[in-house]
Image (cartoon, rainbow, N blue to C red; front, side, top):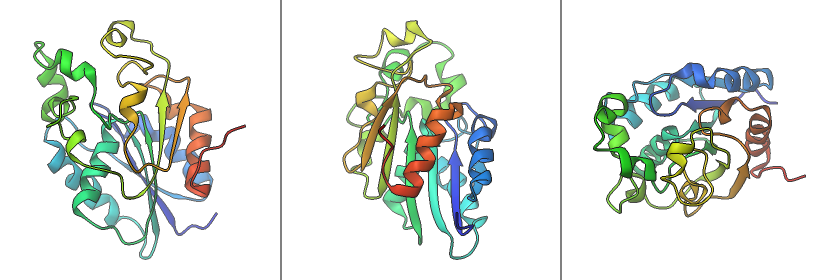
Length: 215
C-alpha cells in the first residue's frame, strides 16, 4: 500500500476519537496515514463542525496525498456538508458507517424530550427527517461513496421509533443517499459497528477497490 494515501476518520455524535481508535490502528498497519479527528460534536451546529473538524485534519495530510474519509454517523453528514461547499484536491473515496443521510426518526421523536439538547447539542437537533433538516438539504453525493448500514439493534426502545430494518439509531433506508456508488447491509449495531472486524475489512476493501466485497 502506498504511504501517500491519507484517511481522515470522523466519529459520531457525542463520541470521541477513541471510538475510531481500532480503525485508526488497522489502517496504519495497512499502510495508510490515518488521521483520527476529535471534535466537540455537541457544541456547534453542523455547518461549523464540518469546518472545525475537517480543515485541521486536511492540514496534517502530506502534500500531494490522496485523501479518503471514513466516518461514523454524524461524521458522514459533516463530510457531505463540507464537500457541498469546498473542493478537496486529491479527494479519494468516502466510506460512511450508519450515516443518517435522510435523518433519524429518533430525533423526530425525542428532540423535545428533557435533556436531549443538553446531551446532543444543536447538531443533534439538525438530524431529523424533515425536508428542512440538514441531511435532507445537502443534495446528492457527487463523490466516490460507499455506505454500510447496520441491521442489528441493542436498543429495542429506540428501534420502536424507526420504521423497517435499523441499527438502533438509523434506519437502513435513511442511510441511503443519491449518488452513492455502493451500499451494504451488515448485521451490526450503530454504537459498535466501527469496531467490528468484518466492517473494518469492508472499509479497507472499498478504499482499495471502490466497492464492497460480496462473498
